[in-house]
Image (cartoon, rainbow, N blue to C red):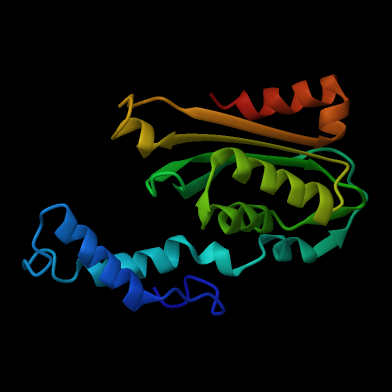
Length: 196
């Protein structure tokens, strides 16, 4: 996992390992059982990767842009999202659809995916994640408008609680011209949903 997270972010692995050992004992397991002996270490390594976004500012990816007189929508559909719900520390996974209308400056396409990833690698709410990505594009990139739609399956809904597998949570955030102009917003939504 080295190199998979920003070098400035490190978690307290020994502390996580102790906590996971306590959790295993608290649920009635034997943390020293062969199959569980290395689990605390593996969980600590996984958490370092899953929460690496806490040590970065995802908007930094938008600092590298290009002057371009393109004034039509740029849209990337189906960016994979993997995050951890902050309420139960269970995963939610899905797709993000990210669009913006440039204002004489465009970002490299991979940068949009990196912004999504940076915000998703932290304890998160889907609603907040959606808004953070839209705000980054609108404010940091200086876009005329930003639209973000996230669709995700939440394990906290499918494995516990109401136990409704197959349910998908959809959140959206619109900024700038997408919030002000219904026609522009509808055109973007039709492009986002066209692949279904």
